[in-house]
Amino acid sequence: MKLILWLIVILLFLVFGCGFLSRKLLYYPAPMEPGREDRLAELGPAVTPFSLEVDEKITLRGWMIQKDMENLPVLFYFGGNAEEVSWNIEPYLAGVDANVVLVNYRGYGRSGGSPKEADLKADALKIFDRVAGDYHLNPGNCGAWGRSLGSSIASHLALERNPEVCKAIKNGNYEVACHGWRWIDYQNVKKSTEKKDMKLAIKTIKKIFGKRPLGWYTGRCSPNTRDLVFDDGGFLYDSDSYGDDLPYWEYKKNKKQLIIPYTLDNNDMRFATNQGFNTGDQFYTYLKDSFDVLYDEGKTNPKMMSIGLHCRLIGRPGRFQALKKFIDYVLKFDDVWICKRVDIAKHWIKNYSNK
Image 1 (cartoon, rainbow, N blue to C red):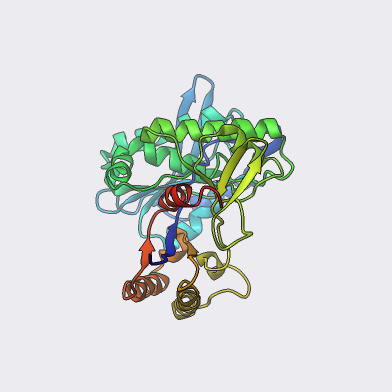
Image 2: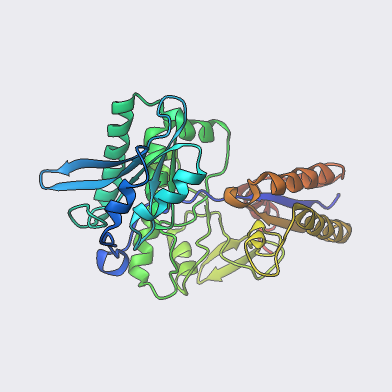
């Protein structure tokens, strides 16, 4: 029986960072600098103030960059923590070929109120609905962009107002693994808080896609993360590990959990780190050399090659070409399986349950 070389090309977890820590721990409302509004008024007619009453006594305030509302796409921007969004107006005005809506969160800038989890999500939908209604926008011609804290709000808005995306993911038979509820470092977070976040993440994916995730990867895990995965009992695999080149089992009392290690080595994140990849050719060469060694070793033992990919990194044209070249190269070989991570888990459970 031929040994199979497992090549996992796509490790692209959907990030559902849709929740936040308590206000005391996470929110740092940024005020507006004195005189800032006067300087914005000098930028010209394309930059106009925006306000929206979201509650009886709370009004959100921000700006719209209106270049061509009829023909250009509309980008809804959601800022990071401790960010007053007006500082993005000048670069967006000069460098983005789109209309842009930037509104400060409750308690930020000159917006009233104070930030709370449910309110930030609800406010984003109200902002979109107001602008879409006023300008008769086609949701397909709109985009949501978030930085840090704002990424979760942008994701929430995109899924709520563009259900076709969820439908496409379902119909495409993609694996929707779970990358956690919040993009934070859980090292010093209470176990009870981390457990609550894990349950919320599972619940959210199940609600949107109709079934719970079977794979887990926190990325910034704590000493408690593995125990919580064990206790949940519903994950086929856990990828919070860099400790091996092949899947392996971990045991806890009478339970066992399959671990499918992730990699920071064959990873496009190295385009954004020191001693990383400067060009697509470097990325391609590194992947090709890794594959060649593993394929040769795979003549006598099974091998697995994971490649970490992130849309914001590999999605740039000069880098994406390297990925295409690598896949074309791999397809020339026999006994190579390009598959989803959950497929690896099912195969390993079936054939190596005692390993």
